[in-house]
Image 1 (cartoon, rainbow, N blue to C red):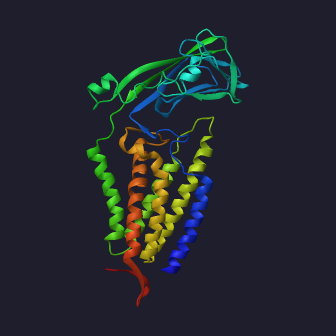
Image 2: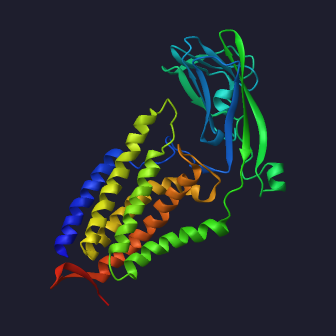
Image 3: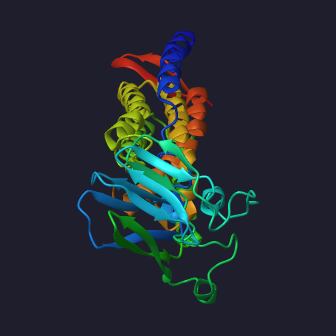
Length: 355
């Protein structure tokens, strides 16, 4: 067992070095919530302008505008005052606009400085050199913390349109309206999903604690590694100001591919009858899966998931990462303690349960 432990320490050191370079990969690039019962979307930009795109980020928490038209786009504040100018030379923000400070807090709980008032002469400060910007816009999300919209509170079992919203823009002397809506969807029933989460965790524990051989645990390692790979591949497109979509996926794939390597090695060990080694790989993979899944913990109890793939698969992947990951840590430790490898007259070393 000392040689087994030494080999695992070498593997673990390499994994930690890789993760130190990549950092934990969350499905929601840029931070924020990975799941929500609310969701905001842009329905129309009227009139359409080639090269001008607007989308909602983080379920309505932010609005992103990308201007590749070659002309400046002006975004007014909540009182119609000049707020943003987004053009070929970058983004300029008015330091005398109340929106500059109100948008610093999700629920606008800020004290405005004396210079921020309607009608004040604009004081333009450049905040980006790129023709794109994402800002927190209070018109696109629900503003009351811990208070449901009236229609939702009256019937939380049904989906609702909370409200429709409009954000005005001006491009090259033309008024533009960005129209959208905020919706609310009931979360999955805890009586249905939480027993499933518990069953997944117990399955991994049982594979290491109760099953006579290591092969079931090894097969589960492949399932967990596959969940991590899908979770990374479905990384949603991040804000343009943060990184490219390809770069975000590459960053997320590094820890996921490391998890796949560990899962394959653990499966191989299980096929060779090395129960203790399989358990050690299960512990390492469990920690890697938890690193990937914990930033997305809120997905387990919310209706909408940030993902570039089907919502159902995104939720299943996070459930596998968290439930199987926790189960692998416990079940892997149990397997290491239970199995010892002894020579068999008719073949290679085989796992023998102890006790």
